Image 1 (cartoon, rainbow, N blue to C red):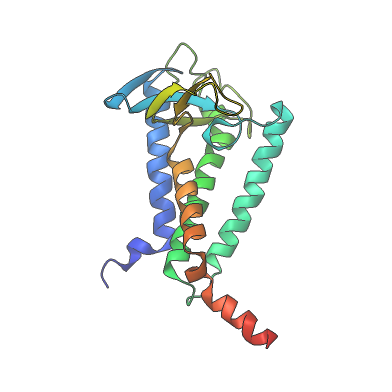
Image 2: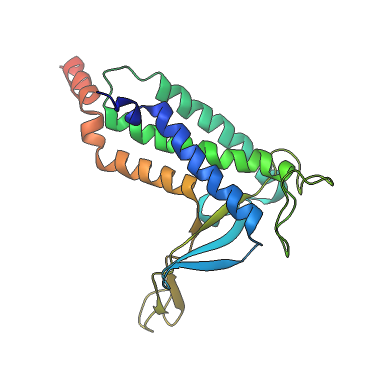
Length: 211
């Protein structure tokens, strides 16, 4: 078919990477940290934030933790890429698509961690400059991941009788994320939902060998 390339793992990887990096570059070079503007009413904002750790703003262990996390990401994404691009041609197309989403998302956030500290200056109280004369805000592998999508869909207060959080305010959905985070989440969720279909052949082969 003419458009078969649209479902090829390489095409999906490059497409997700392009959208992810284009959106991050735009935010980084047009907005100051914590600046925001509404997209759809009060439930979808572009809100510029940066995190030093994992997806959805979670952090991990200071500077050494940041370096360890960056190195772990590189090892993990290398493993994911190897598995993805060595899958047999008979592997389910859906599995390859999901694998490409996870791979592209992980790679997108690695690019931030590895290079953004080198190629941008800080965004605190200013719009960052690409390749500033004075150099970047952090050394290689110590960059911060750019996040921008925020969906504060619902807010309120837990009733007093609610366990643990009774009487506390809540906001759903609190985390701010990016295209890479979304790609990883969608890929993993779809693999979980369709795992029986994706791995059916392997399960059958194992059962036959056991018999």
